[in-house]
Image (cartoon, rainbow, N blue to C red; front, side):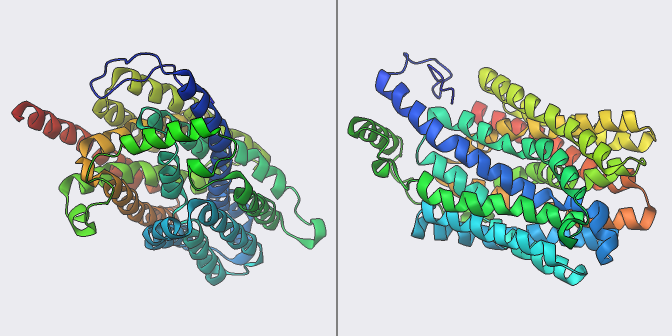
Length: 443
């Protein structure tokens, strides 16, 4: 895990090089925690999005229409929203080690049960249960990382952690295609093998979490006493007086900036999640085989993962947040609209690559913009609220995509709501930036 030799302070200036104990401590923490959490998030997104490939044969087998598929996809996010905050509260009560393990084991069990569905009702119930089981993992993991990494490291660490999202689709596509080819083995359909083989790793990682994770630095036997004391004192010193407790829920939910930022992230969240489960069907609609679909589905996500790291580093280097968020969102929107102008597979693949390239590029600069735009006393609660509100829009967009697809028979038309949301997000980002500049000049 690469740790920067220096980090910019709040004014953008470079402080003196970090001490040996800091290098040593952060290197140990980085290698011990981050790769494991990336693996967990990787599996989480595979289990969330594997219905995209399973649908290639599952929908016909269990009588699932495009509308029903969209509704089932949205139920995941409804449950995710309902249980996200309670899950974080439970993590605080029971400790991250036990709670993260619980999340992974239960979502693995829910995913495994997907192999037993026989109709739309079972599909609805288990997608809801999967959302409820996984709820809280992302904010819980980010909170956990903040309890181990000082502020100077968090942006890069969180960005590295979130690369698991596009990578799960990049690597998960050929895996799912291969599992679909197991159709008939042991009397099971290929889509059943997808759910079985991709759910077991979540349960195994959940059990391993009990060994791999520790609740706090003082519990980490792999840190020396000196390293534990340095990390604990550094994290404690960064807590400003009065910030130990979050602002009220009501004050957070009635803050206009929180809602504006949620609108921005809604388009990005809706696009990444909707394409994770619908893109295989979009590609296969050109008459390709399942294996060809799997290979082509890798391309947009692979390019997006690489560009995500580049764009995040560039945004950190320049310190620019507004344009680093607005421009990629605009690219996503324009590319989605442009899919209506072509019937070519090659052009469509290029456009889908641009869509995801722009969509994932905003992850780093957007969350930096969010934490920097909100009052310090509201930052923690505000970030959770932004993520929760945005997922409501994600659920609605996923359902709408299915309805439009079924009514019109057109995937490009079904992508119009995503194009509209991301364009609104881009414009809203610029308005947020203008508002922040005015306040800075007036101060």
